[in-house]
Image 1 (cartoon, rainbow, N blue to C red):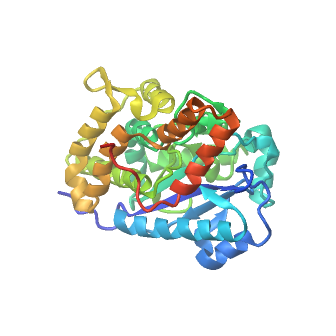
Image 2: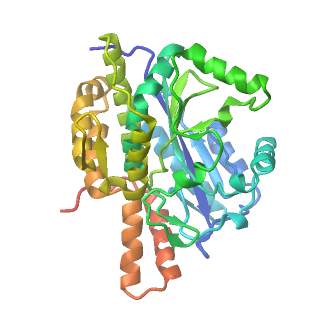
Length: 384
């Protein structure tokens, strides 16, 4: 079995929405002093996102999933407490049930002014939040090799994370609508395949020399080599409402990478598939979440998502055990059967509508549920 050494540390970034507890709408202009309070508590681990109604946090470098969980709980609690002190509430989901992007205000920073000027409405529509996981990988060539192989698994992680069933007051019919919005940006979606790190750098040089793009951080793929850290950054996921689910996805990411590294050391690799085939699974994950039937291209069949997750957990088990995260990885089986945040949001909404609530009152109940669950100590298990 491989000993990972300095490889496969993890770091997690999450983006939260700020809500007015009276109207339950997004807090489009948070009170002065809120971000300063957050930075007083958390320093550089908290920062602005594109919109004023958003906050981004990031853990440090974590060797284990348990360490990441402890830090993430602290970060959420600190931001939630600061929000409450300034008359707001925190919600952890990728979209708000009815807020409209036209009512939101970008943060007045150079990076966001440039983004807004270049992409106009496409940038302004980014009233969405995501979760990114960095995996420390020292070898540059290994980073792009693992990205090539890991792309197959991205739809599975998206389905586990789905938390954006609503957009601008409508039930979209999708469990994860956020990828539709971010997918309108240039340089978004599934990553390209690269022969080596040199191949990646050649692409960046082509973009820079021609004046097309000078900042690699504006390659908004579902997965990419980080331009700031020696990491491979997984970016496809919605924001999980429960910390436990976030950590499970991070642990599964870490463990699958462990499997792929093990295969490479034995002169093997995960089979690559056409981009169109992986995109089909991504669409099914967006549309149906954990209720999807995804294609197993090795067996040339479609299968219920929970069966594929069961199989995935068993495949990565030795690597998860070595990494000390088998309990967190096992929780993926619970999510696949219990449902993601999107399923629970829709349940709250449909039950309220069935009880005679107006559409807005039903949506308010979704916001109230998100406020409560976003800082819950534990995620729900399987129904008894």
